[in-house]
Amino acid sequence: MTTREFDGIRLEKVREHVWEIPREGEMNVPARVFASEDLLEEIGEDDTLRQLKNATHLPGMVEPALCMPDGHQGYGFPVGGVGAIDARTGCISPGAIGYDINCGVRMVKTDLDYDDVRGREAELVDALFEAIPSGLGGGGVIDGDADAIEGALERGVAWAVEEGYGIESDLAHCEDEGRRPDARPEFVSQKAKDRGRNQMGSLGSGNHFLEVQRVTDVFREEVAAAYGLSEGQVVVLIHCGSRGLGHQTCNDYLRRIETEHADLLESLPDKELAAAPAGSELVEEYYGAMGACINFAWVNRQLITHRTREVFGDVFDADPIDDLGMELLYDVAHNIGKKETHEVPVGPDGRPAVAEEAVDRADRELYVHRKGATRAFPAGHEAVPEAYRSVGQPVIIPGSMGAGSYVLR
Image 1 (tube, rainbow, N blue to C red):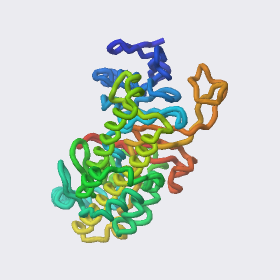
Image 2: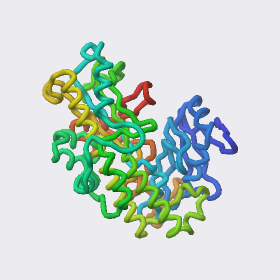
Image 3: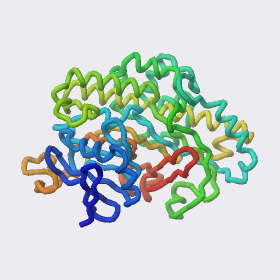
Image 4: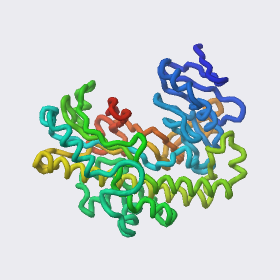
């Protein structure tokens, strides 16, 4: 068996590109890393593997905790990490979801090809930069009053479309149709709402971006055709999240965990994994507040999309939908926690169990934590938009600014 060790953490090669940190000590489950040997070297350079191993101590974790190939050190839980936790006996860890709740990415298609844009790149980019706020601080596509904030938190993209900032197909081509129905705006603090009020439709800073891109390579013609993509086509990628509103919400609940669930906090190997037990008042309130922040982030990307369409329409003197075909391919979140039902190993008592102690597999409701990682549901899955159900959900991976991005399935 091929093994590797990084800073005292041993990994066993399960199969090509899959490495496992075996269960030991207080770990509830093993942990797995998806990586080539070269990528594993990079992942092993920081504290990613230690954070992944620590995450397996979270109560109720089922099956292996996972780290994606682009995993890197984060706050408590590695970026690129996925953890599924039993919704009855487990917990929710805000740090394992992320400060920028529903940071995510969406791709907008166009009927333009590279020749249509060649020579006009500067004009287009300058117009986009002028129209769409970016960087630290405030300023948004719209000035968010109290009604706008509440509408965005409660109804997500449906609110934006009703207000004239989108089209019906935007709903169908967004994860969860752009709305978490379990959102509870009343559990978002007034301070968080105030921070979001003047950031509705803004990119923010860090690795967030709006980029005009062209399709350079198609590897699966039939999948590309189902997604409406072809070589040379111009597309727009938008990468941002819930801005100060989500950050404040995460911070609010982490502070509450420190005082209300200090016992659970003390039992964890890293205080940044701060978690609240399933069934507690704090979990119910955080889950509702997080759902509202998720909706806000979808509205944020929707407003940026609306302004992007307007800019393209002005620059090319054309209708952005009818003439330029600027329809949403897909919008997918990569900092999110959701109740989902999945089949997991169960023990004699019917509760989730590690594989070696399981007697069967059964559907269980889980809090799935995805941090810097998207869902990737296959062909035929009921949560995949009907237009893509024959090939599977688009998985959009934004490259660093100026680097290649990918649409997978």
